[in-house]
Image (cartoon, rainbow, N blue to C red; front, side, top):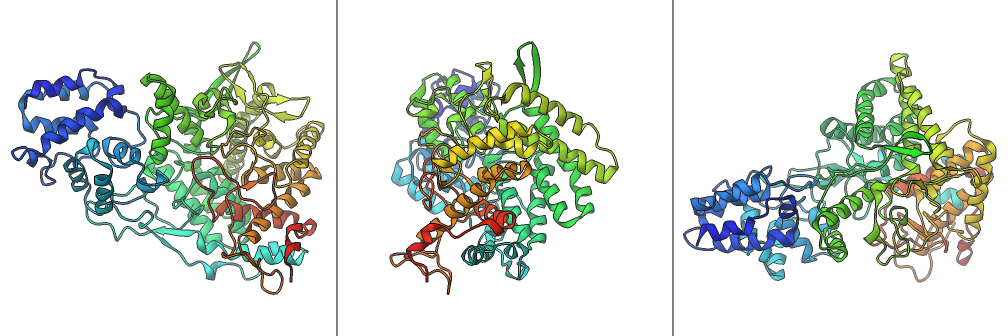
Length: 637
């Protein structure tokens, strides 16, 4: 073995080498083969602490292993140690970046890439990495990788346990008293009882000493969305809270918020979800709105007092990392955008991102930009939508993704709400609102100047590289009407009249956009959070479209539940051909009442936290006006 020949594999000391598996895989394969020789296999032994330090960059660690084989290749350390490293979400060589992640995900051992990165190890990390090297590392065969994963990784979600909350549920929740129709009221009671299916807490006692997991530490009980979403998720939690608080789960709501506040303490922001592979991005920043919502239900000033410094810290993170200048005529306005700084595929969608990027270009820098825009799309919560692309007619449409060039209506409306709420909570705790309300006023003026279309009354995303407002409708267009108090009533009427026309052709709810692309945040997908926001805006301005929105939402949820086997004893019989007991889906088909939504990177999920929360909120706000859906005439006893 000639050390010089191995060193020549690493002649380009750049982040491209480190981050692009097509460059580093042959080099790793060479190292893996060297590790099999009897005299040198010892350097990959788990007793030799070569791979144990997960914070050491990938090739720096492997360079140290190679150095044990021969002193002649110390140049690798120099070349790769100072040449740059990729901007992955974390340093884990299993869950965030590196040859092991690449090999397993590109082998497509599972239908959903998230499955692998949610698996805890069954052995200490060093032993897992050594086992990977022994099967050939990046050069391992698919059967060898299947066996390797089976022997070294446990069941996804096994670090969690379900929590019984039955005793905490309100026996007679007030929201049911406002529902007049007996079928809708009985359905509401049924959904009220579903929270126990979605409450978790961490239990790491089954992990061995030295074993690792992708879960972030959570000290309290929390609500999960359901399905593949096994951990707590940021913006999902807000919509679940609207239902949990009305179901009497006050302590559970407090603990769910507390976990998110703890994440701010640990990381300075709330990650997308409670996994290490989400540590490079957040989600719509609604934590302050959660605290405000909790206070409105409980009047717990001490909780607000403890939360406020964390809320201020999170706001500073968004002000520092996500602000951007927008030029409108001669004016320079300050607004916000989603922005993730990465140059690697998302671990939980690794193979999709990698293949998309490599189909688009052979240029590593262009691929890196595409990876960043994909991750930024995920940070928006709208992963994915034609809102984020240059060419809505391109197939596949995500080849032209440019999320970081879009200044979104909904993010800025949310931050306006956050600024107003921080002013209110600061007044409550300190008797002074600081500069938050002034910041909110400036943001509102900037949004009106850059985003408002006075003809339709709708707000549109601003496109930085085009220096113009978008012309494509998205359901986010009415978020400002929930956010802004004392707005222009005439503009609001135009906006809600437009929504009414959208509902004319979409009886299952307002779709995310009017563009059919196959992505899940496009037509015909109707998402519970978007229906909630539209209803909130209609309530604020007293527009009658609110009742239509509420009825379409109840129709979609109840009819889909009924079609999948739901029944109400003594009120609604089960469909004869149904084999299940009713599903609460995460999204719905706006064009066909009672059908679950589809599209996107994974199959439709059931559970579902925000669906349940928005339904209970809808029953509370619109209960007297709601009627039983027509779909139930099929079999009503």
